Amino acid sequence: MSGAIAPPARWRRLIGMGVISVIAFAGFIALGIWQVHRYHHKAIILSQITRAQLRPPVPMGAHPSPYQKVAVTGHWIFGHPALYGDQIRNFPQGAVQGAQLVMPFQRDDGSIVMVDLGWVAGRTPHDVPLPSGPTMVSGYVQAQELLGMFRAKDDLADKIFYTLDARTIGHALGLHRVAKFTLIALGPKPLAGGPIPAASLPHPPNNSKQYYLTWFGLALVVPFEFFFYARKILREKP
Image 1: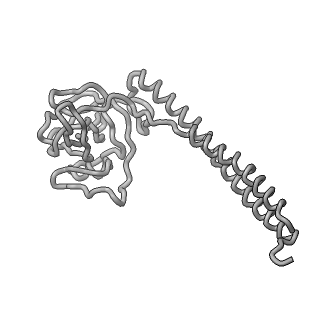
Image 2 (image 1 turned 90 degrees about the horizontal axis):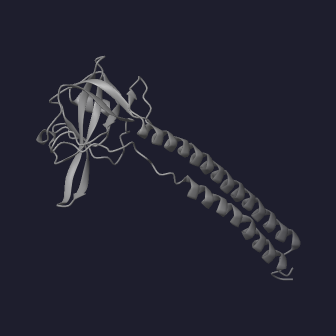
Image 3 (image 1 turned 90 degrees about the vertical axis):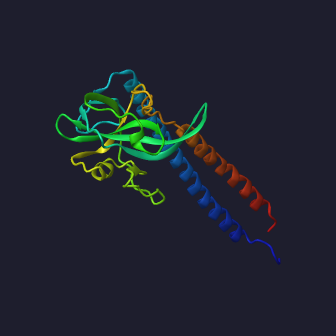
């Protein structure tokens, strides 16, 4: 009969769609399981951060963890401030442009840690009160950022940087033995008109639960879609 679907062709269509459905089902299940593992991994990290937030800072070792508060002793290298980023914050008087104030801190062993003291208004680091002298600084560790393709170019003349690369910033300030990471200072506002430091350890969201529910939901849709497709094919007249 002209235009009729022969039984072998019909089964080839069913088998082909069945193979595609099995691959899709397995892929969605694999993605869901991956997100379940990510969910539990992030939950462990967030639990570590919550416990660390309640504890006093620990002395910073050679390989500090990014999920705890650490403290270093030494002295500020005065006269070497830099700015990182370009951020606008909203205040009662309106939006204010500013950046993160970064200063070098020399540890007792002679090594240097670049410290992000917090957000300051304006684009000139010398316009704000700067810390000096020996002290202890506490905060958390921020890993080196990679230079992105679309990041703005650093302004070496005005000491304004758009990638948080501690060694690049330190070398631009004429410093050596600079640690690869940046210490993000925690605590109350240190000086009147000075930088506004981070209030707590970073607490990233854990969105993996909604992701794994989505993948598992899509996996459940696949057999239903195949069922309706197969029923349609089998009901076609030969």
